[in-house]
Amino acid sequence: PNRVKGLLASEKKKMARIVVDVPVHDIIVGDGEGQVPLKKVRTKMLKLPRVLTGQQVTTTNDRLRAMGDLMSNMPLPKGPMPKGMRMPRGGKMR
Image (cartoon, rainbow, N blue to C red; front, side, top):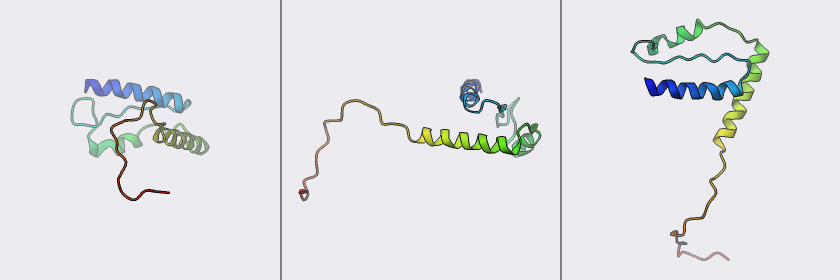
């Protein structure tokens, strides 16, 4: 539970940079104190206040999708190539 709060705080900071005008809520799922059981997550989320208009939802969704695409296409790390690889002995290409 303690390490979850630190990870949650760092993710909340990242999201706050991406979606500037949108409030970010924390919901920790579990059976312990201060946690929401999995069966009640839906009702907990539906009780949250609705602060975005339809246009803001579309804009925020587009921004999150764009950031997701950037994160999945991370560049390859730079550095020396491994030297232990051998070329296959099969037919030679011309």
